[in-house]
Length: 196
Image (cartoon, rainbow, N blue to C red; front, side, top):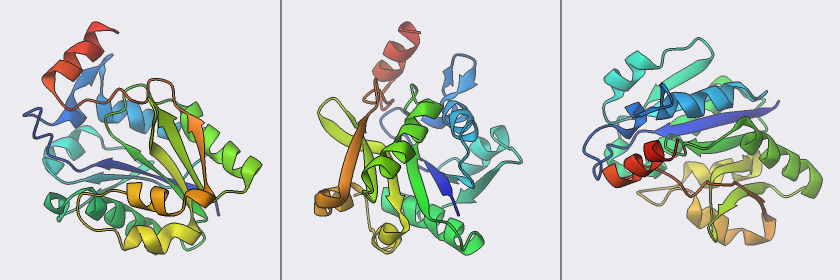
């Protein structure tokens, strides 16, 4: 039973010019920060989906409690990484009831962000629970298995946003403080380390 976590870390950080997954934040890589918080929950399995720079990133993030999946089709966009991660979970864990999709560059993610998604699901009975910050909704986002088929049919760069829009009646949100802070450019990164 239970809930798995898929951490999307397959992008090539084109606007940054180097792999953002490996940027140092408080003595750990950005990706390690997200992995550590995921490992602190009761969720399993924890899948990290890599794409660009996969070998280099994988070499720094080996851990016996995470499963690294290489998405060869990462250039086609985020949807392919969601499909790669979810397909792996379903194949190896037939009992899985739900998943949380997270990304590798939300530096302020905490264990409680994952847990509050699951708590809100129990409380409301809704099948999609998204995080909200700065007037938008996004990751991490929780999906019950009722939506696995829709997730597996995603294409291109869209990510799961369209599912959130289409099934708004089945969606609840939780606040993720500082969730809007992600790292796309050198300026973003300088602001992050300047503020630590």
